[in-house]
Amino acid sequence: PVVQAMAGLAALADAVKVEEHALPESNADPFGALLERTARQLPLNSPDSLNALRDVLTKVVSNILASPFESKYRSLRVSNKTLRQKLFDRIGAREVMTVLGFKRVTFLGGGDGAAPGEACLVLPFDPGEEEVSTASEEIGVTGGQGESPSALALGEAWAWLEKQLAACLEMEPAKRPGATSCAECALQLRLPSGQVAKAGFFASEPLRAVRDFLDKTQPLVRTAPDSPGFAAPAAAEGAAPATWVLQQAHPKVAFGEERLGNSLSALGLVPRATLVATPSAGSAPQTDLEARQRSEAEAEAALRRAHESHKSSVRAKEVCLSIRCLG
Image (cartoon, rainbow, N blue to C red; front, side, top):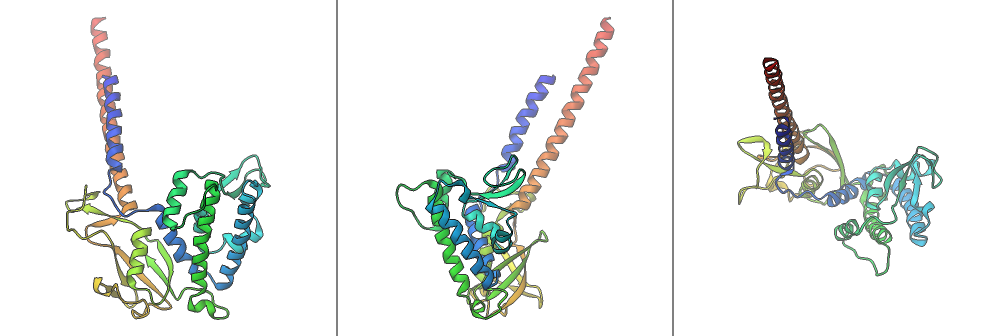
C-alpha cells in the first residue's frame, strides 16, 4: 500500500505540474518587454545623466568589440565608483545592461580584477545561438558573417540602444538647460499589486502607447467567468482581448477606448501625471494568476499527501494488530 501511495503521489505531482503551467496563451514576450521597459525608462533621466551614460557605454562596448576575447573588458565591477555614478545608478541601467547581454556574477574566489565575494557584471563569451537569434529578431537588425555570437548580440544591442538614447535627447525638455528629465510626459502607473510603473513618453504619443507599454510589460490573461482562480483554456472566439483600462487619479477621469487615440498632451497628462491601471473585465495579471494557481495546486497536493499519509498510518496499525493476533 505504501508503494502504491508513493506511485500515486508521483502521478499526482506530474498532473499538478502540467495543470500549473497550462496557462492560456498571452502576448507575453520577455525580451520584447525588456526592450519596452528600457525605451520608456531611459527618458526619465536628465540629459546630463544620459550623456554620461552614453559616454561610459561607448567606451565599454568599443573596448569589447575591439578585443572580444579580452576578459578584463567584459567584466565591470559593481562597486566601481565611476561606473556607479555614471551608469549603474541611472534609471533603467539594469535593463540597459541586460539588453547588452551582461549578467551579474559573484566571484567567490576572486578573478578578473575582482576581490573574493565581489559582484561584477560580466558579458559571457557565448550567450547561445537561440538567445542571439531572439535578440536579433526583436531589435530588428542583423550582423555580418564570421562574428562570434556574443559580439554579434552586443553590436546589435548597442546599435538599438544608441537610437533610443538619441531619441531621448531629442525630446523637448532635454534641450533646456538644467532639465531633470528628458521625457515630455512622465507617467506613474499604479498597478493592482500596489507597484508603480514609471515611464517616459513624447507629448504627441497617443494614450494607446501607454496601454501598449502595460500590455507588453505587465501581460494579462483571460480568466474563466465561473472560476476566477483559474485561467480559461482559451478565449472564446470574438471575445475582447485581455488588456489594461486606464484612468486618471486626480482629477478622476476614466479613459475609454474612444480616447486611446488622443495625444497625451491633449488629455492634459503633460508634463507628468499619475494613472491607475486595472485589468479589463474577465482578465487578470499573468503573474497573479500563476501565483494563485500555484498556491491552490500546492494546497491540493498537500491535502492529498496528508490523506495518503493517514491511510498508510491506518494500514500500518492494522498490520501491527494482525501480527499481535497471530502471536
